[in-house]
Picture 1: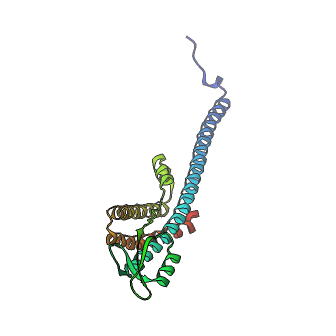
Picture 2: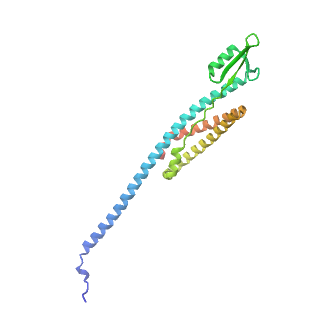
Picture 3: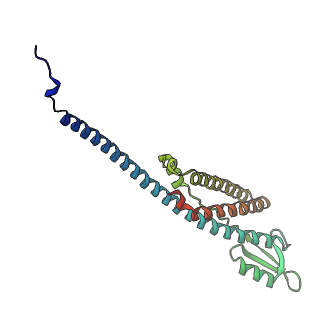
Length: 219
């Protein structure tokens, strides 16, 4: 029986081959990890950019809606301040009605006017309340959560975004209440809800603006 002699092996060659294999495997692992990390960073950057665009659009929509609804509240309050006339009419001077119509051209569509005193007229017409409901999107945020990329955001960024979108949901719920109040012709309730919305969307606006200033901290 032949005996295997260890001195016949080229140990330097064997050790060298083992080292090459070891280095090759570690390089492959490192490269795969680097590629995965790079892809995560790219996906994270894209998600943040889309959320940034979404918040900018929501901020513009919020401001536009608030401006319209503040005018609506002013129109309703001014109209309520007029003396009541026959049925759904109001009693004001021609000058007062002209000023009102100029400031709020689409609120009251006059169907009839009757002179009841020297300069006073009883105006009858149809009132149109144009309530604007903001369309605040959260598609980018929900998509980021679904894909799991939000797990790569730092804590402060994730906490801030969660707070913003929670507040946004509350504003949207109040807008639904305002819409229901208008449909049920509950004007007093509508005014109360709009006042509450004004306070909430003022807070939401500040949250939007603050996040947009520090958004680079999320990347």
